Image (tube, rainbow, N blue to C red; front, side, top):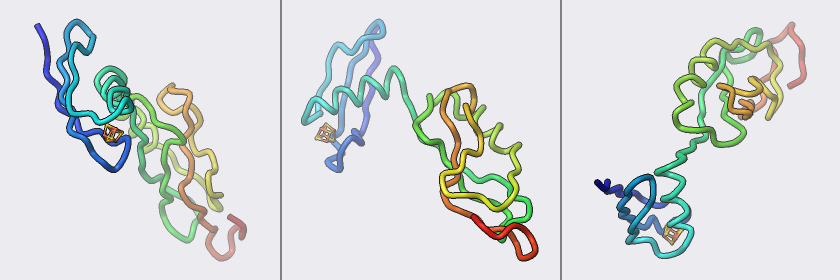
Length: 129
Ligand code: SF4
């Protein structure tokens, strides 16, 4: 039995509409991609989907109550739920530096969650971010 996957390639702005037929964990036909990158994209998206995730974490003593964060690299799509739960439990103390590691090895992926921007401490707290 085969399964049809229809994907929009995001490897470049062309956004080719790719149609694949998969049988026994193998792509047996692919149409719509204008180049080899589209085939590689379809392979990854069907068999090893990865995503960069973005969120926020609470900040203690900062000029704002939260700081935006993201994974330094894409992580497996099936780890996103666990990763977001871990991020939701974190509170950091200001100041926060740009790209500061907030969570090393999120969801056991080997990928760090880093701050997407610096955040200064409130007056009376530490001054540098
Ligand atoms: S298949 Fe090639 S040309 Fe089409 S969107 Fe993907 S990378 Fe771009």
